[in-house]
Amino acid sequence: MSYNLCDYNEVNKILKKYGFTFSKAMGQNFLINPDVCPAMAQELGADEHTGVLEIGPGIGVLTKELCKVAGKVVAVELDKRLYPVLEDTLSECDNFELVCGDVMELDLSEIINTHFDGMTSVKVCANLPYYITSPIIMTLLESEFAIDEIVVMVQKEAAERLCAEMGTRKAGAVTAAVRYYGVSEVLFEVGRESFMPSPKVDSAVIKITLSSSDEFEIEDKKAFFALVRAAFSQRRKTLVNSLSSAMPYSKGDVTNALKKIGLSESVRAEKMTMEDFVALTKILSEQADGK
Ligand code: SAM
Image (cartoon, rainbow, N blue to C red; front, side, top):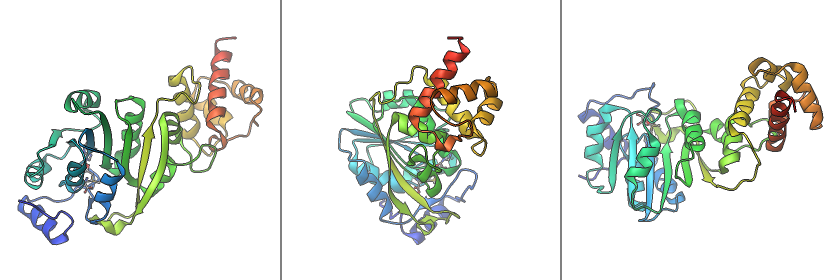
């Protein structure tokens, strides 16, 4: 049977049929605006040779659109109560596969490598559960999976951070990761009334295009990201204070290192560019090695 998953009454009927009630803890706000999912699917630039990994299909409103544009869609869903619903709502999609489980615990690399056999590219598309937006995006970036693009809906504030310029107030540790692994842009905003139930905040769809270019010469990625995370973990503090309290460096070590790259000892994380963080990581490591 073909359902209109953007029709409020029809969705209510489906939910009632399966005795489904929304879980706030699982970030369940289902899209109901008929324009959003086709627009997200279109942004992927997918074709019959493209595999799409979706995180959190809900009742399948976005999944259905992805199945129209891609060769294969694999969706990971945590909530067991949605499995029979998806079997029903996506019964006509023969290029869809459901993977049951928690996206934060499953071996995504294995899923990408085994489920998209024969596809020439793999992209991620999702209306992300907001409570784990940053961890999911960090995993997708840092694990260096064989994916080339991420088109996701996130809270508007998260979108601004993910697409901010380094060295500006909106930047955070996740901004540095996005900047290192690719290029990001806000595609369009989506008001809270587009969801069922309506969340308290607005959202935005962003695109991250992953690249393998070595724009930044980072010798020790682990040390670089540890430093960036420590710097932004107490963003109101000066770098001297945040790094000396969260990392094995003294205030003197950090002050000296900042001086060597021409930065003031009162500088805060949000004023640092990628190049500043790269240089600071290098100097602090050298100082620690006694070079
Ligand atoms: N894609 C649907 C839509 O746009 O209407 C649902 C989006 S809803 C914001 C988030 C979805 O992620 C829900 O279906 C929820 O059950 C699922 N989810 C929450 N936590 C998850 C996790 N850890 N792993 C996989 N799916 C999860």
